[in-house]
Amino acid sequence: MKQTNRWIYVIAGVLILLFAGLIYAWSVLSSPIAAEFSEWSKGSISLTFTMAMSFFCLGGLIAGLLAGKVKEKVLFIVSAAFMLIGFLLVSRIQNVGLLYLGFGVLAGLGSGFSYNTVMGSVTKWFPDKKGLISGILLMGFGIGAFIVGKIYAGLLSSYNWRTLFVALGIVVFIVIFIGGFIVRKPAAEEIKDFIPAKEEASNKNGMDFSTKEMVSKVSFWLYFIWAILMSAAALALIAQASGIVTESADGLGAGTIATIVGLISVFNGIGRVIFGGLYDRLGQKNTMLLNNGLYLISVLITMAGLNAKSLPLVVTGFIFFGLSYGGVTPTNSAFIMDFFGVKNYPVNFSIINLNLLIASFGGTLAGAIYDKQGSYMSIFGIMLVVIAISTVCTLLIKRPQSSN
Image (cartoon, rainbow, N blue to C red; front, top):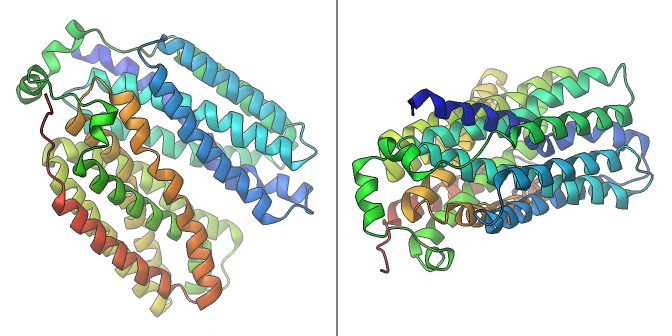
């Protein structure tokens, strides 16, 4: 097998994740819904995204448990069907309950199925490039919301949002359905030439951990705390990004503010590829420490920009924030495979992704702090503490020993 052949699965995986990541475009997708149903509170509409993230994690866990028991294409077909039905239901909503069912439950589950199945299949083709491939795949998942969201927003002037939801549901179904007949796991002989000597020795020594063994390791929990803190800090900033831009520069239009805030998403996608590749070169500890350092720089720059009311500094801070937050997700994937093995990766990866359930409250907490304090500086102060704790966790992580 030629090495270039395995990149077919990367291309298919990126395309699938590009559309499965649409759940992250909720802030854009929901704007016309909120306008039509103005009697619905912001809290009730925001709950849709919280539900979508919860069922995304559940869908990933179910897909992980089914991996190896059913073929990948079956999981992709289920994913495509869930997302199609979910988007079609949203296009016909007249009450918030149907919105929760369509987008929160079905689209969330469908996205989780595709996410876990792509990551659990395509990464196995690249035992020599775990971090880089994780980064490339996750870039597709992250940047899809930005790209498709922009197209959706642009089409709203010509088409009703209900029509667009039907179209999105059909396109998502087609992409995931077709991609599902391409993406698959490799047979052992197909990747034997790509397995690094160090990993081959580890495999022979039984360095594959079951999920039960993994969660019994201190290294797992230290990393889990790191992932929660880093993600929560980023989501706290994202939730307040528009307000920070507005406070740092007067008279900006809504389009300009949206573009500046969108830089976080763009550089988040770039950061996923960069940090994924760095993990392969620098290893776990150095990559995580570099990420912590970049977070620190981004906080300090943004604080300085806000204090001086300097938009260029705030924009620079947002760029660094995007890059550093982008480093978390590929590190999740590479860390689980690197420390706990390939055999149980689909389930183990879904467990580490549960950090999102806790981290998602970062934005809510930031909003509550701002409402009470009337200042963003308190939020940044908490972020500095979070970075310090994350650094301690990073330094304490040790590679686990096999229980065999």
